[in-house]
Each structure stands twice: as structure tokens, then as C-alpha cells.
Amino acid sequence: MARRMLDQKRNYGIDALRILSMLMIIFYHILHHPNLLPTRVRFTPGYDVVLFTQLALMCAVNCYVLISGYVGVASPHKYSRVVELWLTVLCYSAGITLMYYLFRPGSVTFTVLWRSFLPLLSREYWFFSSYFVLFLVMPLLNNAVNTLSRRRLEVILVSLMLFIGVFGSIYNSFTNTDSFGVNRGFSAWWMMVLYLVGAYIRKYDIFAHTKRYRFLLVFFITAAFSTALKLLMQYHVIQTRHNVNYFNALFINYTSLNLWICAISLLLFFRGLHFKPIVNRIIAFLTPMTFSVYLIHDHPIIRARITKSSLLFLGKMPTPTMLLCAAGIAVGVYLVCSAVDLIRWYLFRLLKLRQRLDTLETRVKKRLTKEKT
Image (cartoon, rainbow, N blue to C red; front, side, top):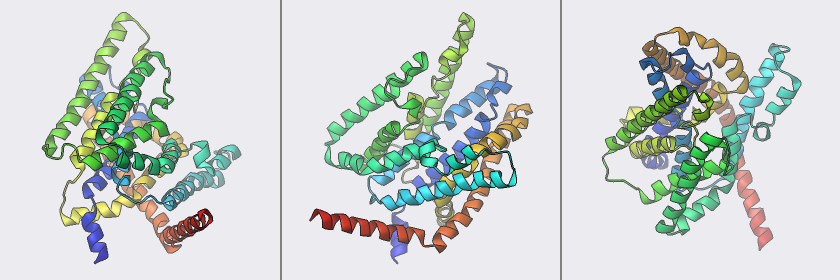
């Protein structure tokens, strides 16, 4: 009965967005890592469509962090969860590297091997390294959302999004200068901003009465508009014979206006989305493996030795066929990686890792409470 009540409270729309975001990330990596965009002739329909697809997909990382804020502000904060997450990262970072080191001698240096055992410090996965810092300060962010007045919180969020997201991104694109230390969105600082936005959306349920399809419309219009602007700027650069790299970062920083508008639009579309019971069961089954899909498919060695080289054949296909194949491969990668992670999931379950970590955290909290008193 308790489990049934818990399932009733679960937001399957948010879980569906989590899965979709990971599929979008894989799809983007399939197009980006083999560098398939230059295989299209610039300013042809094929080039335009691939560029639009990439810009539409790039908001997925922002979606993932927005979800953390949306869910985290109303959930108990347990440090045991980030320890479990770290162990999962270590499992794949060190495990995959060790397999290459043992079974393909000379393919991996000892330096790369030992760095894989320190994924947090070595930033083997930039997202996890930044997310770890975000997780540590989540209680402070939640406290800010729950104690500040709505007006004050809105002023802070608008200021952060404008100066870091809009002005900072534009200035970085033109000068290659990181004015606010957000590293184009590859940092914990930008994650904190997105976390606050997601938490704000959850607490005040903004645009609750707006028809859902309008958010999807905003997503596609924003992606199309940013594509058109990027093409116009590329055309201007070529006509004026300026350096094309001058505008390369425009619209593709995670802090870019178009990317966080697209991400927020998807969050607003998927929140509270309802599905049939059988779809809910599929979503509930796939969701726990979602982050591991990222850890497996984007492992540095797999990215360098497989993704960048084995997918070059896609560049020889007509654009519609290339995109359909890339989308199909993305689904296949997601399913294969999820199947692989089932082994890890059952192992952690067999070891009762989550219960042991929860027990350890409870004991530490009790000890700290006694010391304070």
C-alpha cells in the first residue's frame, strides 16, 4: 500500500523528460563527436536541418539540471545519494578503463588508468564533477527558495539569468572571455542558477494554467530562430571575410539564451504529463539507469575510440537518412547501456548499498547532533 501511494505521487512526466534528455544527449553526441555538420554543404537545406537539430538537442543538459531543482526542492536531501552516485561513476570510470588496460595492452597509459580512479578530481566526467559541488550546496539553495519572498527570488533569478546567461554568453562569444567563471555553462555555478530556476518553477507552479502545447511551440520556435540567426551571422562572417571562429560559440554555450529557454519550455511541457499505466511502468523501469547511460556511452575512451571514428559513415548519407539513423543509434545505445547497468543495479541491490549508506548517514547525523548538545 505504501509503495502504491508513493507511485501515485511520482511525477512520470518529469521522469519521461529525464529519459528524453538523455536520448537527446546521445543523439547530439552522435552528431557532434564525429563532426558530421561539416559533411553538409554550408547554407544548403541539409546543413540547415542538421544545425537546427543540434541546437534543439543541446538544451538537454540544462534540462537535466532543471529537473534536479524541480525535484530536489521538495525532496529530503541525503548525502548518501551522492555517495552512491560517486560509486556508480567510479564503477564505470575505472571499470571501463581497467578493461582496456588489461585486454588491450598499450591502449591506455598508467596515468590514464589511475586518473580513472579519481573521476571527481580528474573531471573524467565534467557533469558529475560540477554536479557534486551543486549537491553539496543544495540545502542552502533550497533554504533560499523556501525563505526568500517570491519577489526577491524573482529579482535574483532574473539578474543571474541576464548577467550570466545572456550578457555573459554574448560577451564570451565575441571575446572568448569568461567574465563570470561559468566556463560556458560547464560549471557548478551555472548548475546552481538552473537549480534555482527549477526549484522556483516547482514551488510557484508558474504557467500552470497555460495550455501545454504552447511550451512545445516555444521550444521549436526558439530552436528555429537561433538557427536562423546563427546562419545569418555565419553568412555575414563569410561575406566580410572575417574569421569564422569568431561567432562559433554563439548560441551553443549552455548559458546561451536560446538553450535555457528551450530547456525551461520542455520542463513546463512535461511537468504533470500523464501516461497510461503500462507507459508509467516502462518509465519507472528505465529512469534509474538514465545517468549510467551517460557514464557508459560518454566514457572518455569510448568517446575517443568508438564514437568519433565508428560513426563517420553517417556523414556519407543523405541528411534525412543520416538523422534517422543517428536517432535509431541513439535509442539503441540507450537500451544497450541500460541493459549493461542492470548488472550494476542488481549488484548494488544485492549488497544493500543504499540501505547501508542511509544507515551510515543516520549514524553520522546522530553523532554530530550529540556533539553539538
